[in-house]
Length: 617
Image (cartoon, rainbow, N blue to C red; front, side, top):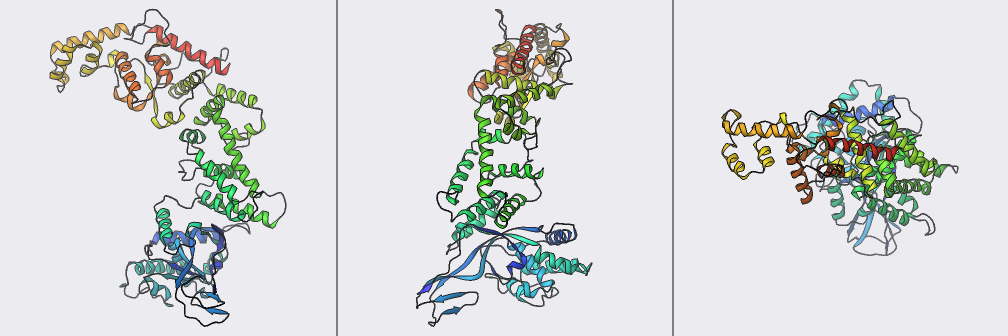
């Protein structure tokens, strides 16, 4: 019978130099689109490689061309062969022991390209221009042999020939013209460029497990579609996972093997899809607006930043290369370089550390507040992770409280937080920090957890609790109709809803003045300046949508709308805001819900002081 030749391993992953691809035969399948790179993309590639060639670098440095996703090319059919030791095919070899029909066989060094064909085609064209025929791979376009396939096989590649072979050939000819123009500028750079391209330029070589043995191309097409729709691009974490699994796939059960890594990896990824946990972990947005398709990659970015001082966000595969280099060094040198168990344990330790912070209410609130305001680095030598590793938990918590205390506005007298003099226009950012912290401490005292996720997603504003009456206009009819709760006014209002202020009947203007005077009386406008409309005593947090919807509404109108929406679940009201509109801070026997009065304001300020004192001592 025929001995079937199968690819070794699964999720095979490596770096390959361009010269390592010599004699490989790449087939671009029919389900892929043709060659479409534009002039700018070709020029960018040429300039990047030349820039790398000309800069000072270590011997181990190389230019990375991102990923090439392939699967071993296989075929199946009735083979009429003579019985001899080996049979040579066009692109491969099969060994024969006895005759057999309908056998699956795998070509030697022949690969179907699932992703990366645009880069491969461009590299092929560059090598042709550099006349590197003895160091080239072959490239075939399935079903396009009379178009771009014929053009690629043409030894002359005359770019001035009539462009009647389709859009693929048009783009390939344009790319060739760009390549020719690039090297005409300076012929002396050809040798350096050629050496750098062949010996110092690498692709990330990836054979995904799901593509192996896919005889009908169904999984390959699905994989191609998902990659090109941006749903599962080959991220650093995907490549590192494949690297770990590939390197440990043959280890016995008692060691850290591929099965254990895959199982633990999937568990951590699943836990990171708890949205509250994920929001807590990523507070402060430490790596910019990077979108994490695989959330575990956040931990790999932390490791890279700890190692290099900064994550290379502009270098797509820098994290993977870092891990690959560590593993290669461990293979070459038997010293204290980290091996896969060490590297994987680091990731697990990060998960354990964040989980420890998340489940401890006090750490959750202290670290959440500090990180949300970006008051402490996560990864620096004196950052949160290093401090947590080197300090006892009680000391660590004390350090966090001390940090918060030094960052808040502090008066010169007795180290107390200066709340009275804060106003909306001069201290807006400081006020927001104090209001957030007041809510956090209140939640913790009630054995609840501050909703960081809702705070970030709903974009809470600083809201005036009671609007100034003189800011309310006669055209704001709904405010005073709601205030009086008068059915006759409600009916009359319908008649003037669409009138301008000048068109409003005098009797309505008179009633409105009565309304505004009553508000002014209730608001006690003669109150001290420190408790005025723009002081902290008249400010709270509320989601932007609700805050901006009722604008300058008086206290009773705001109260009614906020509580109704909160009860119906339409909005989320922060606990301290809810306490304000239910007058929970006012212990007086005579409580009026028509105004946020001077007594309410003083009680509110005293409550904030007490809560901050409890936290910061």
